[in-house]
Image (cartoon, rainbow, N blue to C red; front, side, top):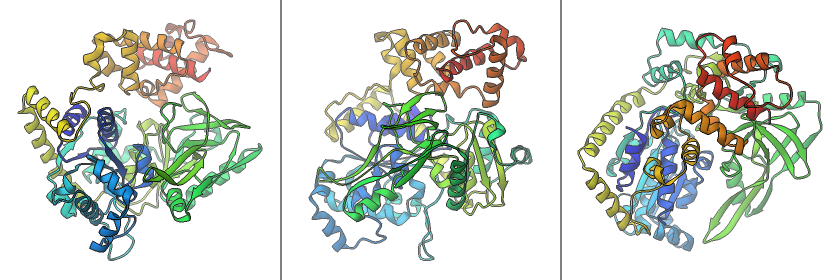
Length: 569
């Protein structure tokens, strides 16, 4: 199923489970649908199974949103106690759609609790009280954490709520993170619990000693299975830097329990020590400023107003403190404020879930959970950006139960597509209009800004290309949508770059492997003897192409020229 088909099905009001391999665009589709509903004045509950996952979509945990907290059981008395809270009444009175992301990490019995709470507030026995529910995730990724023998951590498809809600399955097949066939093939084989000898040999070839400072400019993010290894590496790397250290402490207000809950549900630290030269990662989304959860960079200065970070793609960001809040009945009950950074020489595999990274060093020698290796390996965009320190027998395995259930999901998704394709465009639009009317949307026209192509004539040609780049489309996709040559699209991008040197072209840069990027940059420096400021127009392509072999295209060289220009601003 394509992303566009999934969006059309969501807009018809069905309960939907969005799934697919890592990097297939699940969160992208969610964000598109959330934006679509918000633009029509529809009240949405935007949640996830964990606080970290919730930050990816600008939401809160499902535990907090429903008011159920961390309880494993809700008695009738507990539900009545929740119904005495005015802020929850207002929330459920208004809500029409509920999103739960990273559903693989939610226990089956907790989805039943969500169903129970929704029915109680909505005063009916329809699944989830009649609220449209969107689940999103991938059962090949990390399962619910089991805390006891009585709590085996079953996936949500074992719940009564799943069985009774008639979820339409939208299995996304497109690949938007991985850039090479080798990586995609290996991940697909892991999903089938059948890693071929060829793929195993490719992974074995990536086993190397841990990264050292002498390895070059492309310093990896290191993924480890245990917190103790992560903390030790980050501390040691920071100690190596011979510059002044500054400590930034979190500011908090509100009740102790709520503050503690906030601290546990975000990646920001109560205390972070930084030095100029420290490798850091942003832990919150701020699209306006230009970073998202997982953006990597290096601290270039620490001034009176806080740290300055140069991101991997060359953007300079004056980092400001960010806030995380818990609100009840329109009032802030708890709030923590901290710089949205943490040291990023190393992070845990669990915390990496949902991120896209360019250069990864992973130690899977202590893997203790099936699916852990899949999560770690699927973070990297290209096999060229992968280095493996160690593998154990668990690292490349996934749950046999999930493999079997995945076949069922694929079949149901195919049925969903067939049913959708049987509908005429007029019938699809009619159902979408009727759903918008049923949930009290301010605007019942299902067309929206995600249909970029249909609005093309109303916009300037550069603006159209710019919007498609912001929409994270590849060069080939933009070329097809615009019906223009790739060279013409690159010409647009170069003109956009002159007007806005810090514009985010990172999606375009991903189309060139890290190995090729390095070789092309070396060729540019050799051919043009670059010193100081880089002149985009004077750095011609032919001398660079002459230094490279036939596997390097002018498109790749021209793309890297833009990247080099941004890196040297």
